[in-house]
Amino acid sequence: MGASPRKGIQEKGNGQLWFYWIVGAGLWIWTGGALLSATTGVLPLVSYVFKEREAGQALGRIQGRVRVLEARVNSLRSDPFALERQAREREHRLRPGEILVLPREGSRE
Image 1 (cartoon, rainbow, N blue to C red):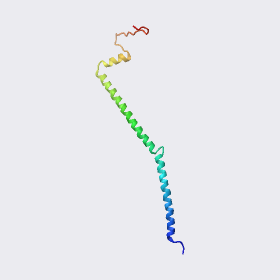
Image 2: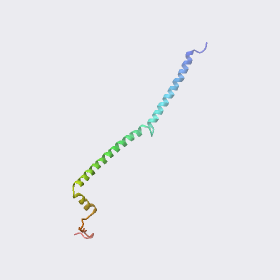
Image 3: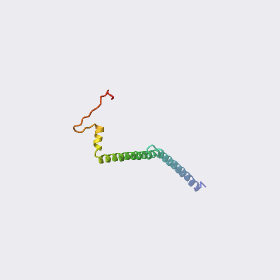
Image 4: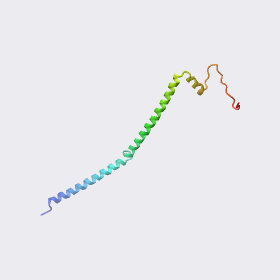
């Protein structure tokens, strides 16, 4: 009689099984490559998370410094003599009619 129809179906099923195994393995390899990729993988994601955390900390430090400087500006604005004191100390400014007397470089008296 000939080959049974069941044997032909079984051979066809084995071919499909091999196809599914190859496609499945390929998908796993592709997924692993995508996860380990330098541009789309897990490592750049972790790196971005740490960079974001570091940037947030830097922003916090900068905002703290801004608050300190704003407090200093407000204290200088509220004190009428503060601006004059700063000008005299830092820029060596004088009032009209004042004379600045500096010691000689060699004298230590």
